[in-house]
Image (tube, rainbow, N blue to C red):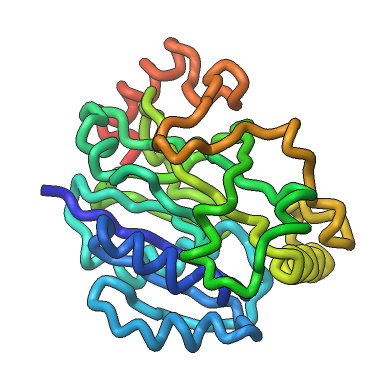
Length: 270
């Protein structure tokens, strides 16, 4: 049976990190945590958990880049066997179903899996009515307005010869992309105070040279509040409205997939 290795790069997520790590430890075999010098107690919470599957690895003040995940990968790849799965996992994510079930269905030869974001937003009504001093594990069921519009790579199947250049967001030639995507709930907007901190952290990282996070250009948390009418409503059935045709295309054209298959099987690509 394969193992699941998660890599979490985190900064200032104290309100949610205990809950997300505890939930993920139900299905992940290892969660390697890299903290970007949090100032809100995030790192101290992570260190206090004392869970055998949660590994507080390192805290540094490096400017964020997607390739930071290569560092814990190299530090802990000795724990992995061929066929294990490595997952990008962020502190504000929850999987409504065990992702192991998805990985079990991925056919051999398809080693790269994309994820679909079910992204939750605060509405004007939420801001007026919710008690944001409530611990997030109790607040979370009350956040019920979501959109599904984004998808990106989330996991790859391990091979011993994989090489991960720390300047890149993923290992070189991770494999052919699987048709099935893993679905997860994403809670980037959890309270006015947290949204403001999120925007401030991301603008700081952009000022220091990170070129991503265009969605964090706003300066004020109020700019992230949305109307209920613009969202889908989570009825807590576990079923989400997902229009695959509206998501970014994730599979290469057939000729390119065939070429990748040949290059991997021939050993030209490690």
